[in-house]
Image (cartoon, rainbow, N blue to C red; front, side, top):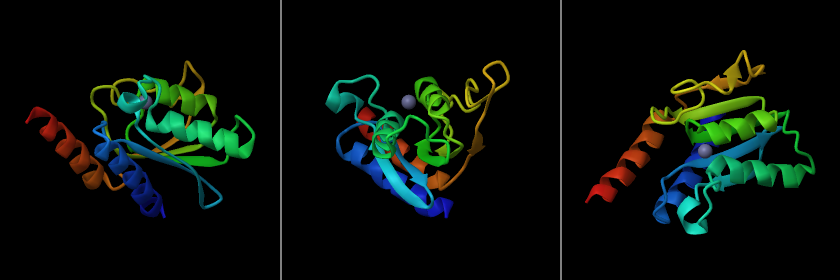
Length: 148
Ligand SMILES: [Zn+2]
């Protein structure tokens, strides 16, 4: 089940890749159905907040007519940054499935933990390593091309 949705998040990440963007994709699932998708579009939209997760969260809120995404799960190919983790917490998303860690800005524990934080009173269910190889490979390919 988790892999099926992560495959869709990877499809989103590939869209970013095609655009020359850092390949990160996300989908939001409610009752076993994808209700929103997003892929990183920071460069093409010239918008610092146009991360995959933010785009997907905005779409899910629009679609449900509510800012509360309590019964939703988010699948994302790369560990969320602090901004996206903040948005996940604000939207009350219950479960987050992550492809691979982000040692540089991961906010699900790699650098800082916003999703599970005593001071903030947050306790999101987080699962790492969902189709990790695929997510890692895509990022590696992107950064290798960048150096060429
Ligand atoms: Zn982000």
